[in-house]
Image (cartoon, rainbow, N blue to C red; front, side, top):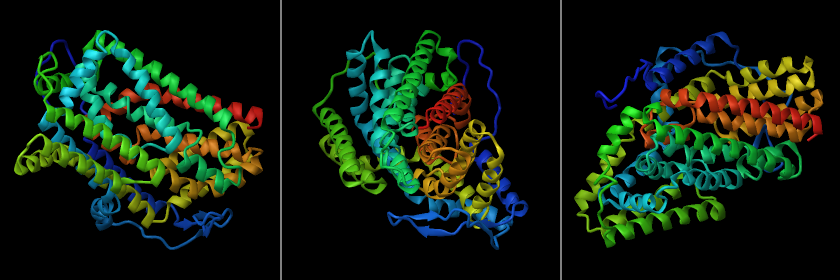
Length: 469
């Protein structure tokens, strides 16, 4: 990170590097394989053909007690498991390296700055609601990563900080994903496994989505105004000052947009439209999205008359900036590899769920919510977490007097909100890599919002129990 003296006194807290933190978690999970008994639930084919957990089938099995070599090989095995998302991160970084070299993004940002001059704050609600709709309707998550590369420099140009730029697309989409009313990858799958009507409960979920999104937007507008008034209030102030100086041409400059840059901007916009359409209509995922972005970079480079060698070196430079994020993905997946080999994930679920049967319903519903958070650290996939937990939590909810609709809501809340702080979330790591924000700084900034979300979830779940949702 950049160094240097800036106006005003800034106290820099020394914290472990994110690599150190995640590797320490690998060690702790390895130790847990020696402490916790290995066990698993039986998996059976669900009604839709997906593999689900059979409730009441937990049993002890032989497990791998992680040794030194298991710990040391966890990162490379994690890299293999997370190769797709790691590769996607590097390709997206390379594409934005090409766009940066052409100056197309800078030119587009300059125009947006002028259009919103004097009313920059409205960029936050307009775009955050749009991203929240994307998260709620078609499960927008990985698709948001490239947008971070656009909104961070835009936020810096408008007098905000990197956190605002990253939050508009990433937090916007994640809050929509977490409180979704129609997300097929979470709500749809979980309701199917729980055997409740598909996308039922739409009214209450829509109310929750609107409340959570509005609270987030208002918080971001408050924070953005505070940072613009006092830039030193930003946790990323020192690094943002350096990045503003690095922005090509300076946003106060009066340079004209070339025809090639116009084509580059159009290519970027059309590419994003194609990606959104592909995700909705054809269930595109990382491979197809990466392919579209690569095509955008090639087209922009050719139109801007970039020599092939310069296009390649610009791509390499952009990818190099995100190598750290790709490594974090590998390390985080390494945690899951060790826990899976030790067969302790099902064990943790079993021992956390068993005591709930003796608790009052209002207490147990929120305890189930906390358990879902713990599981989310190890199983960040929304689909995977639904297949693992709903077959167990749904019958447990029946015993506790909790409707299956509310059980799905518990899973939904527990699966999403903490993705914004857990380093095992590949989308978070990739977004912070694009924004060049240190994970620990982000977590410290996120704590107030996480407290708000946690309280909001407890209220939402308690109301759900009260109304028999």
